[in-house]
Each structure stands twice: as C-alpha cells, then as structure tokens.
Length: 174
Image (cartoon, rainbow, N blue to C red; front, side, top):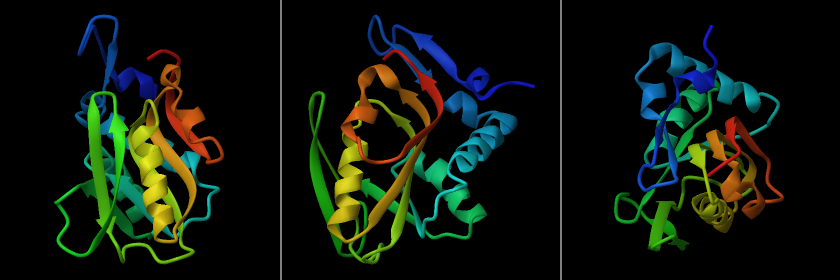
C-alpha cells in the first residue's frame, strides 16, 4: 500500500534552481491518492470541535469541501478580491514579490463560530495568517488549520504560533 507521500510528484529546480516543487496535482489525479489525502487530513482533526470549514481559493476548495461534507458542516470560501457577489470583508497581506488581497462574505461566519481552515499547503504562513485575521475580524474563532503539505523550512508554523496546525505530509526543506 502506498503512503500519501508516494503520490506527491517532486519537481527539482522549479520554479527556480534549488527549489523542489511539491506538485499536488499528482495526488488529485489518482483516485486512491485523493481518497488517502482527504481521509488523512480529516483524521488529523477528528478530535476538533468546529462549526464551519473554511478553504481558500482554489486548492482549499478541493480539500475543504469533502471534509465539510463528510462531517455535515458548512463550507465557506475565501477568494481573491473581486470574485464574491455579496458584501465582503477583506484583508491585504504581503507576498514575496508584491501584495495580495483575499475576501469572504461578511455574513459567512457568525460571531463565536468555531472554524477549521483547510488548505493544500503552508509555506511561509502569510496566506494562513491573513485568513486567520480575516475570520477573526468577523468574530470567528479559529480552532485549527489542517493542510496536506507543510514546507517546514519556510517556518509557516512559527508565523501562526498559538494556533493548532496539522499537516498530513511535512517536508523539512523549502
């Protein structure tokens, strides 16, 4: 039986020399890999008490929706600015080269609701930190973050210290 790591394609020197790109599409393209990814991530947070699952565009949608469905929880989208049709709240944050803005519907989380964030990856933690701030700005309580892959060498875990982070696969490098 294959391990989850066996489904991840590693591409050396992409997007630049010295980087090993961990490709999530190879997990998604294999039915057993996808099932193992969802089951593993869901299992990591089985002990958590949460009301809502939140996932960022776009791969957070892929992993978050089945976890929400399996646990009979609503799923809330976090999207890039300008993609949601109703009243939104937003936050801007710095990227390695520039800035990004994400938003969610203002009424998607009620004050006091316990939130599980689901995504494919945590690297530097900038996007995850922004999501936490966005959720908290409307009264949500982030009880955990679960990701398929963690690039531990980029120290995203440190950036969101104080929040529970579970990762199905942990790569020590960058």
